[in-house]
Image 1 (tube, one colour):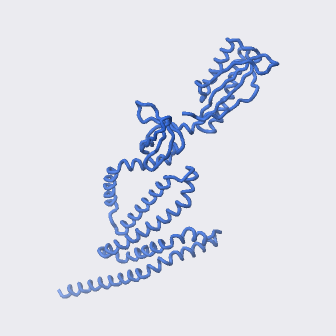
Image 2 (image 1 turned 180 degrees about the horizontal axis):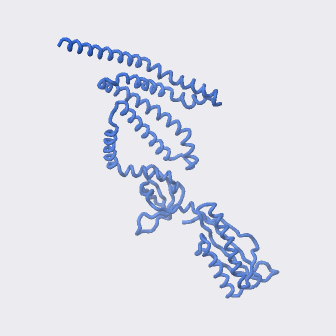
Image 3 (image 1 turned 90 degrees about the vertical axis):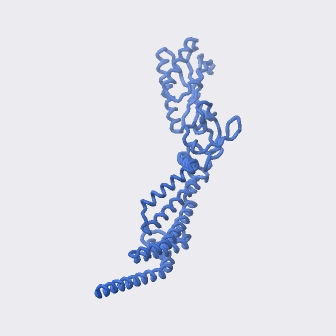
Length: 378
């Protein structure tokens, strides 16, 4: 009985001594942590300067641009990061570790959020805004959307670090957050739909402010023609043509609709002249018209409804003959595609010449085909 008592006292004494030692190590680390945090920017500066000697880069310039503006946040984050590392010496004492860890990892998470948000803001101001100007032509709400998503991601990472530091069950936390997320999404379903609809519109860019579109919101009603006034975070404003009224449509609705962007369509009027060496009788004119129309049907993107054929006397007074003017429109959505269709026009011209030659009807092209840009109208 006495031996058991002595053994128990020895174990308690050993436990207390080990606890005191570990507390002492942690206390020393806590005292040194502010100095470690303050020295972190200096270490980074010397490291970048040393790297500059070998990689032919200006390490000091990199430090001044990317490290110096975040010096205070870096000091705070480095301090609590070192303190969190020192806390591991108390990991065997679960209650004490959890009690101290709540404060330490909370402060570390706040420091990470502060540092990461400042860095993200700097990157957005220096890089993202210029990219948005290059892609969209102006700085608009897409920057705010991107910035919000970055901040949400930073906050999520901070929560994960806090949970891992306290050795919490991430699966259970994830399930709880999932339930909370479902509740929030149910309560703010329309807001979330508009947010994701806005993001989809900015990434896909089916239209931008100033362009004309044709869209249908009611299958039993006529299409709506209008000009895009603005694309906001929640809705798109459309100025209705002829009525001059403003329609405000949620972005979630616009993202799910099929629409026609009239402004991005390209339309070119082409005029081709064919000079025949003799006067064409009415029957010959009908034959020529039929051959031309058949040739145009073979080659796509010629608007049949707007194609016009005009027979008139030849402009060369020294030579008797008939001139045929063919006026039609070529439509496309890109410059490369229009170039292809111009080449198809040349092929159509060759096909017409071969068919007319079979009827002993020969012609010359007195001048190259004239192309005139025609704006797409609604």
